Structure formats: structure tokens, C-alpha cells
Image 1 (cartoon, helix red, strand yellow):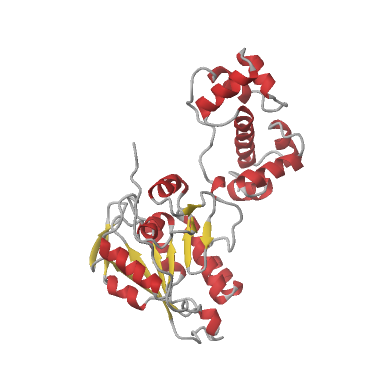
Image 2 (tube, rainbow, N blue to C red):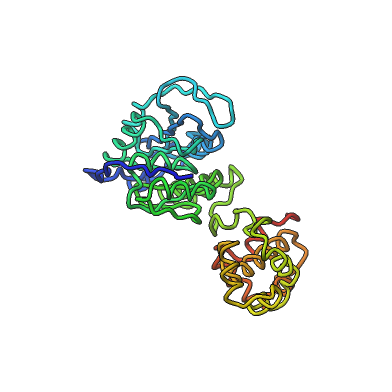
Length: 349
């Protein structure tokens, strides 16, 4: 299926300075009342909004915290907005709310491949062009891309939709692994929980680590997460691939504890190394040794999640040889360490 490419006129950069963050003006008073003029955060609920994404900025920028933020939720038109979960939320404000926003947050919506109506895109462009900070959570990046705000920028979205974003909007440099991307005036996050990371990052940038950490503790979230979306992507060794090398791939999965070479795989498949490599790429999309490395990492992830083996034992069972080799490949591919991965995903935790 061919996905059409969206084309638009480029969006001009802001004519004036970007609105200053609250931290640039002052800090909250000791008694908990803001010592600066309020900072208006407007959350734009599009049709098909993801309810969890919608709740994240509303919760983290809530007025009950000692911050200068004031949150307003708006929609294309006041009234009921159907969520992706099949229930409606009532929204009092319309697009005029964006005119007074210091920060606009666009939560994820479904389906992301259908751009919002032109009035929404015009309002987003107008907010951006006057210097408003523009933020997206999950597939909300598709709305910013449709408005032209992401042209020439790095951006991220949910890993399942990253390829679609790149195909629809080739002017956008899609970072498929980042939890969030901060480009100053424009910020984007990956799926769902990464929206929490981005909102905490904004609060930390605006008001300092102490305020962000306090809010993180209140919502029982990590103040700062390392790594990228690769940690959360489903196991990357497909169960069903091409048939001609299926037996060899199954054999490899039982041999991950020992060193393996292309020659070993070719010998098992009774093929030349060149033919094996060509067929492997055709059937799996990657080279034989890349596939083996991915299989080793997948096994390591499973063993770490069980939580009953030491790092040295995991490295040995997965064929990495040493804990240092395991750590190096984990960091390079998954963006985190085996120890931190275990803390985040251990079934025993």
C-alpha cells in the first residue's frame, strides 16, 4: 500500500522572541503561590484523542502544585470530543484558547494518518509563529507535522507510528528511538508514558529539578529515565519469517550460549556463506550476524526480566562472553545498561 506524502507551504519561524519560561522570570514563592505571572498551558484535544495522553499534561501542570502553570483544555469546537477509547469528554474551550497560550500541548489521537481540520492547523501555526512553545505527546506529532511545524526538525512519536510519520512527512527527521526530543520551542515525545517524561523535562527546565522531582514523587513516576524506545519495542526476532532458513534460525536460537559465525550458519544450512547472507537478508531484512546479535539481546532481556541470574551468568548464557560485552551491546542497541533494564522490567520487582 502506498502512503501519500503530505505537502504544505513551509511555516515561517517566529517573528518575535519565544515566550520566556517561568524560570527565566522568577521562581515560586516559599508559601506555594506563584511569584510570577501565570504560564498558560493549553491542551488541544483532537477528535480521537488518547485519553491517557490527555490526562498527562492536565495532571502534571495542575494548579495544585506550587507552579505558575494554569491548564486549559480546548478542542476544535466546544462540546463533546470522542476519545480513541470510545467514550466522550466534554471540553468547554475552542480554538480561541490557543491565542493566549504560552505552551500548547497536543496529545496523541487516532487515527494519526488523518490530519486535523484546517482550522486546527491554522491555529497551531499561528501559536507557533507568535513564539508559543508547542509540544506533542505520542501521535500528537502528526498534527504538528501536518501544520508544517516539524519541517526540518528532529521529532519523535510512538515507535509503532514512527515509520508512518516519516513516510507521510519526509521533511521531518524522525527519531525512532528517543523518549522525547527537545528542539527548544518545539518538543515531541514518544508514546504515552514518555509524555510524562517530557512534561517533567519541561517543568525541570522551567522551574528546576526540585520542583520536577517533587511532582514526580507525587505521581509516583521516575524523575528522569534513561534509554530510548528500543527498551519497550516488542521482541525483535519475528516468529514467522521466510521458510528456506527457518530450520537454521531455530538452530541458532538453541546455540546462543556459544560463539557463532556466518560460516557456522552456512554449514548448518548447507549453503555458501555468500548465498546464506543473500537469503538471510531477503527473508529477515538483516544480515545473519545482526540477526544473531538481536537474538542474543532478546534472550538477555528475558533473563534479566526474570531477575534470578547475575549479569555474568546472563552474559554467558547469551554468548556475549563477558559482562562488559553485554553492557556494551545493551548500551549501543537499547540505550541503557543491563542493570537499569532489570530495575525497570524485573518480574520480581
